[in-house]
Length: 424
Image (cartoon, rainbow, N blue to C red):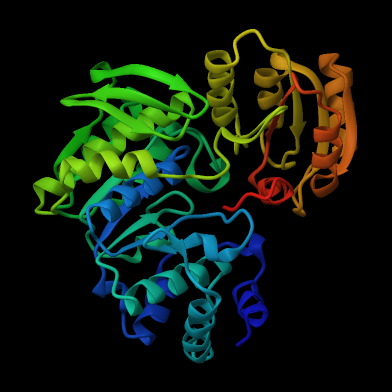
């Protein structure tokens, strides 16, 4: 296949036709010789923070000298971003070769795999063909029935911050959400939980006990911020002093705690991770689209906040890093998200809003978003059209001392990154 044919092969089934369950994954992987069983994993789930957490974990393991795989979603510009080997996106050729192998076997299947299942199998196949020593695997949706949960017991399961999400699929309470995410815990496999609500913790602890798995929880009381700026943060946690990360944002400190505790669990299981690798891996970890500085004068920040929890985290960051500032926003949202709650959180910071339509069939039209902001919040809001055009209008409107913050949907992030010449 050509690269374009590979993308068409991946997208052959409707994005909205997602069907949870592991039977198609198990069948296709078995037809391919069960490549996933050749690999060792750290499995990461959560509502917010799982991508950043996975990226930091992989960076530390790579710094320790391991041949790593990293699987995350969604991509911001190209599918290749979802599958990284030793910190670099997999090549077009690797994807094409994997697609050729998969296509032959999928023809034998009566129940064809979904888009996400195809991408996940492709990643596992490539990681196995490249003989990765350890793979950091991010869950797509939930955990228990997610396509990634086809793996056998990982070296460690990691659960980041949990909040209500995809309630029509995962459940209407935090306990139900936690139960789905705790479904990645396997028998005898240790689990690290980011400290959060008692209700969520109770569910995860119970699942760990049922699986006879060691349970670990982060301890925010052991965290001390040393310094922070838009270029990164330095902090102490437990017995480690002056840990540096290049990722700004209050929530990244919480993710970093989770990573450090997971690294300690891996070390206890025999993985050789020197302290020098921990420090250099944390310092060098990158993750696009999360409170990311894209331009300095005027200051442009890109954040992937696309739900109320993410908007709350972004609001905390704005309070911490840019206190008292009134900001220009570029905002596009999905119609099926709770964008009203996001607006309640973010509009107190707004001077003006450029409303855009992200590239998705699920997008709320920019004209409708602008109308809601003007009428219900009394904030000047402009219909800036598609996000590919809106970013130019928003940026060109800013003077040197203005601050532009782009948020609301990950679907628009790729176009914004490309506008500023950044990679994902």
